[in-house]
Image (cartoon, rainbow, N blue to C red; front, top):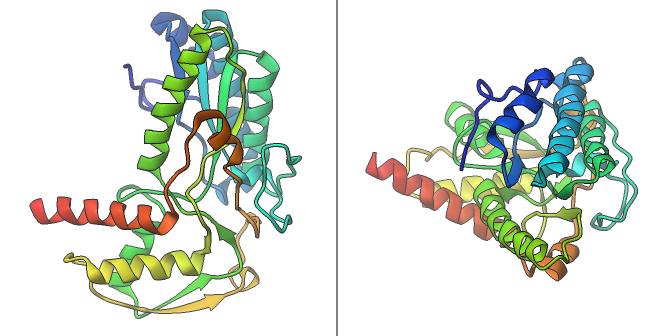
Length: 276
């Protein structure tokens, strides 16, 4: 396995991508990188589209040339969030912000170059490290006595480790299909089971933080607010739920319920903290 960071593989430097892939000649190409600054993309849409769209097309073209399987991650932000039920892979995209448009450009580039590909759409991704909703809530809980959290946007918080584990199984299954000559490219939703609001997610985080023997012991008051009370440069979908039926039918995979996954994530983080 060859894992490349931004210094070694900068997707904004498209002229270097083809040469790099030709040098490595991968059997499987996993694109886990993206421009993800949703609000900043409103002012930097050209850069976001370069990284999330144009560069992805280059990866797809090279994957086709070298006969590689391309795994590419996308987002529920390709939808407008107005649907009442979970989105399926067959629903027509209609992004409402620059980030969503850039990710849709990447999806279309992959399908246009017709390599063997699996596009995995996910949502509300978090982990015990890095910049994400979980780490932000834990940090703010130490700094403030009251937090206002949006309660009218619904989605499925999805642990990055569960995505990684599922991806490994998907790749194994996909390679077996390719060996048998029955592989079919496609788009698949990959999110945790169940759903909640950002307010509900924050509440669960604080509940678990209080129960774990960790440094996160302050319990600020959580105030539910509407999206309109927390204006941001980029509009967000009200409904971010994605149906996992197609993933289950093709690969036999269902990600765990979101609250169970959150508990495992925070337990693992607390164990590391105690041992450090």
